[in-house]
Length: 446
Image (cartoon, rainbow, N blue to C red; front, side):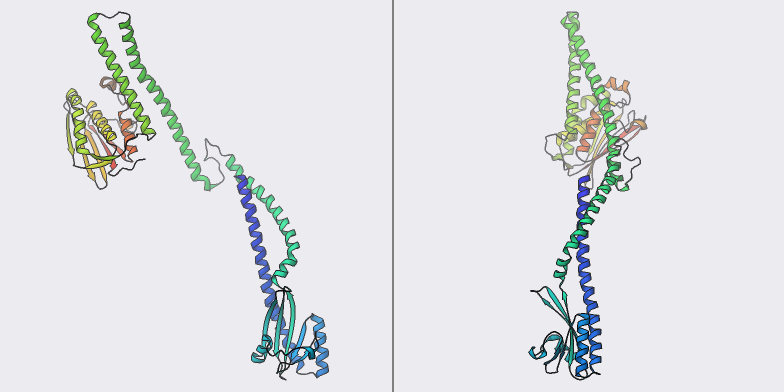
């Protein structure tokens, strides 16, 4: 970055210097042209006035003195174009001047000014002409360098000045680049917003700070997740290992073998469910579900979930009813089923005998709204932001009684995020809970 800033500043200095040089040369040339026109018109007017009061000898001496004094060429031309006098050449040997632009204009308008360029000599000649009362026209001419010739003559001086300014620019650019880069190099990554010099970097620094906070939060969640996974895996594995060891060593009575086998089976099933849920979360985290979105009939999907949960509702003595509009949603069908199943299962298990669970699905403009409402035990306000965390349980003693992996609502959250939706919760302890999921009817997932 330092090198780029340094090179950019040098290039900018060079470009500015060149632009200024061209501007100064053009300005000098134009100003010189204006001053030359003004000066020559004044001189030729003075000569024309003087010629009106002099005889031929006085005129010749006067014109010669003027020509030597200001290194100019003076010509007097008769009305028919014949050259009567020229300070540089013999008048008798010069051609007719009646078609010269400056002479023609002087006879027509009384005065004229013209500039002619010589490409071969890289020179330009300024002409100023004035008509005299006696009928002749007097012309004064100055030879000057053209703009190209001026540039060529000034080139050595220009390069000296250019080299000096470039060296100065290099030194200044180096110091400025160091001054700019030093605070950036000294940013405290852990506390980026403290004592930073440039306000323009505030949005970037806020993003870094936000990233740091998210990284710390994710690191904390990762440690908690690792600890929870270890604990959740250890419990069934320990149980299976213990019962298997008793069976292997013949320490179980014949009538208890079936009971011990049932325990091993249930714990292994719990272990398989836990591993499957962890795999689902990992795939959702990485957006590697590997299933295309399809048009899903939500009423058919809800009825399948209702049938799957029938044993659960019977066990917990909870009434489960549906209020589903005949709508479709473009989504991953298996994930939608997982979402409905987990939400409804949670509402049933954390309910009271004789309670109810309502599943409503309706269309609202370009959105599909899924509501799962129950009159169960409810969720404390301070826990509502955490129930979608992995392995988080509001009532750990109650959770042990009902089982489960503790990952159901975490999967729900990831499914909603995968489909670019949002999830809201409204709950009061002892009154019940309503969870609302809003999804786009046309989901675009990568």
